[in-house]
Length: 197
Image (cartoon, rainbow, N blue to C red):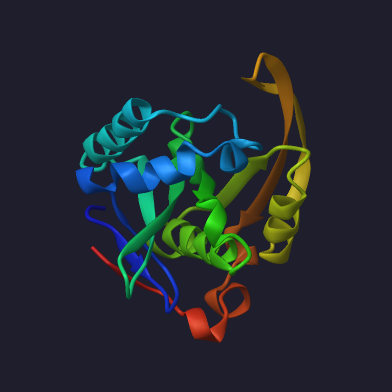
């Protein structure tokens, strides 16, 4: 599915362009944002490589990687990164992992929840996934509350999951199944989303 653009009243997910490098650097270059992530802050060259990879993989068929810009539709301001990656080891199981990061100055405005809602819509309504899951740092209590509020059940802990800042860190896994998700129960009436391809 290319190109992807998913809109709600407050946000959109869209394909990356080369013009997004500096906007993504404001996300991935910020130590406050990356504190709970599986990597340290990235420099401009690393961010440019991330966007180049997102652009390159967006047209591969079958598409298994959806790395998308999170933007405010009215202003076109890119404020974050949203990702849905289909678990390629067992594609018939229709499982995908999601993740996202937002600029720190945009926190506390409901954009994180809206990003996850749009990723759920992409996975379930558009791609026919059976299971969507996400992994978080055990210390990321904000992400814990957000995923629980959106119907993602905590499944358990993966011990020693990622090596970051010279130490092994556990991850807590949350998931939601297709029969647990419906747009009417997991999307606010004010944020009904539409998809164009």
